[in-house]
Length: 98
Image (cartoon, rainbow, N blue to C red; front, side, top):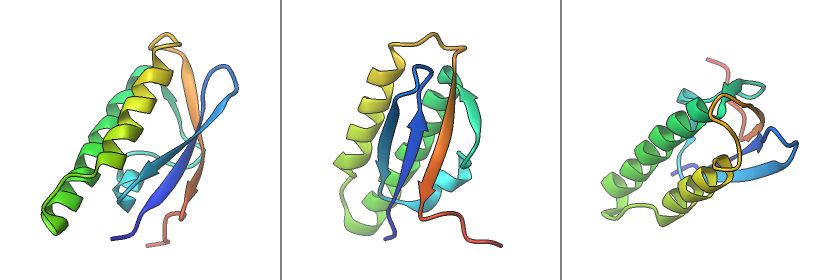
């Protein structure tokens, strides 16, 4: 199962590298995309849940790394108002052209 990382620039300028066990993140976020903190927490949470579900379907257990990434995102987000803006600065691997 392909895995990926994505980098988030928080409103204070700090960068957080996040992990996903699935490329499904590309369905929810875009490199260069700007989202409110609230929207990012929602989108990334749904994406990581779907990624973990894909791991469960393939291997029979959920991905604890996806859950940990979700917890780290929620923790970092709690430092900012929901309407503050974040940016996705990188996604590795990048989206393949369709």
